[in-house]
View 1: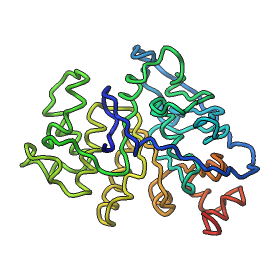
View 2: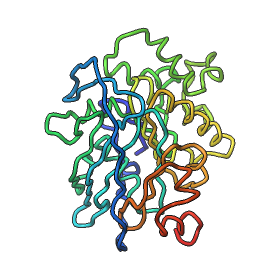
View 3: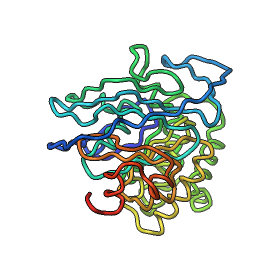
View 4: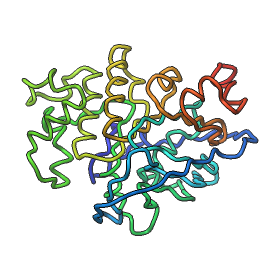
Length: 309
């Protein structure tokens, strides 16, 4: 089985994508969960889709709001009372040691944890003011609004063009597909490299190009949020730098939430950073500069300075 990028209503999970992050020996007494800033909301232009109010929200307000999110895999708790707001049109990084629940929280946003029989989620997680776990929310409609890119590049065994157009076709999205494909490839900083060979297989591209192709595929249906689970960890330094530059430009149009084990990468590309530590705790969430230069929590400082993790 291979990893899959979530852009369609096709079942997309695989074992490698949804293996639970569980620390079997949760440690510890964390401080109270970081709170969230309150912001005013001014919205207009409402339509309904899959149980969602698809209103355009004001730049700067939180687009994702998590309140007391708890996740269990059978009897093992993977996340504990996670509360945080993710601001719109920026990059939010989630860092922490392996097994601390970063990817588990990422999968709560688009309900990928629903695909794990042993998983149970409690709490409220809202996208643009709508709880994604409300009974009237269609998970397929949710995943159309929340694209996802995984660690390993995973183009389909199709042409470059058909990879990008895949979501458009199965979601019956109207419009000029040629123009949409070109725009997505341009946003992914790939069009100039492949414009004369769009009919060639996406599998023939280099690793970095394949990951940018997957990003183009994810953004072609025009989601609001782009989730990225260690998107550069399998790439060489040059390709990693290209992905980081791309994330910075994508944040002007999309809300990007990225899981990374690379703290230097989080410091370079993110506006906000959430630090998860052992036991599925969100120990601190703040502006990235503050997290890395003057964190409030001693455990966060110890982790960032390499005393553990």
